[in-house]
Amino acid sequence: MKRHLQIICAVSLAVLASSCTEEISDLQKDAFIKFYGSYLGDVGRDVQSMGTEGYAVTGTVVPDSVARMVLILTDEAGNQKEGSPIVYGGDYQTAGNALLLLGDGFLLGGTLTDTTADDEFETDIFLVRTNEVGDTIWTRRFGGEENDVLNHVVQRHSGGFVIAGKKTTDEDENLWILMVDEAGQLIYDLEGSDLDDDDEANFIYRTADGYICACTYDDGTMEGTDIYLISLDENCNVLDARAFGDEDDNFARSVVRIGNDYYVMGYTESTVTGLDETRLFRFSVESGEITAPGHSATIWANGADIKGEDCILNSEGNIVVFGTTTVNENRDMYLVVLDSEGALIGDPREYGELGNQSGFAVDAAPDGGLILVGTSSLEGNSLISLMKTDANGRFN
Image 1 (cartoon, rainbow, N blue to C red):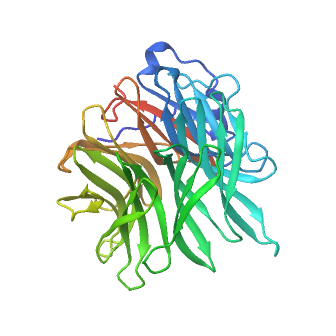
Image 2 (cartoon, rainbow, N blue to C red):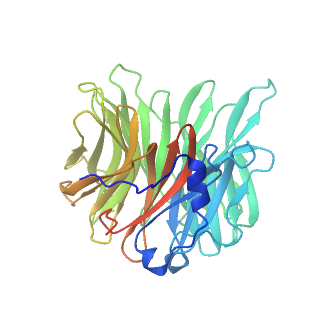
Image 3 (cartoon, rainbow, N blue to C red):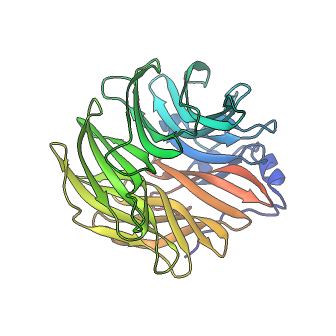
């Protein structure tokens, strides 16, 4: 059954933006839909629950015709707090891709666009450390004179942060894993691997004694890209690596743990149907060694692209996959719930009516529900969208 965003009498995203200032009653903390931004090209990319304090969102807004990394702070009902939104980057064009909630503030990660000596545009990894109200404590940038990207970030075991991304050198794209200390100073970085060119680190998962990095790589054959898992110790030394995939193009997006096992989630461009399918590969890690997958699941639909972007465990212990479905160039947010064996629970849920909706990230809400962030676009404009549902993606 399709679940639509209830957008009533909205003829443009400007109307949606004006509605965001209205207060929502306490009863609507359980389920709401909110929009934020300047409607000029705004994108929601990550969300973190702050418990009973509300939610934090990052992405990109365009308040003055220049794209800016943004931090949006809301209460439990999605109403923006005083001083929100906060933008970062000064005179540079910046974008927010990832967000960490810390004990005394936030770490935002994304990109900063600059010009090279040859007047070419290039992007660097951009980090912003803030206090609890979003005031900047420090900023850092990492990169060369080609495009470098931050995809994900986690807290480091011994303090600081570990970053998963991509570094471009001589037009070759390589996975890039960086460790920085609590002040944002570079401690160590791992660039590339024993793979061919054209690979990137998409997601970093912190285990009890190290990390698992989910990557996408091209082995240089005609068989497409594969998901590539790297097991790392607490100092980011490589312990093991394993590829998952087939002759199709496979792209890594997220990792979730169930008991002693893990799922790596991503999507595949099927050579048979020409459509995107979301896939989950099961694996285990023991003493740093990655074992072969015991089970895989595929999420697909006739005539539709299903592209998973994020996954978590909900309060019922089931896997929630969130992303975007596309039919005839019309996009809707898409959510499915799977059990620990990868079997579908209930019907998939689609959110969207007017315009196009894209889903990017999901987090657990303090009441056991879900908080979802993405982008709502209409007539060439877009806003950041935030939705609160129950544990299975329902509004009731």
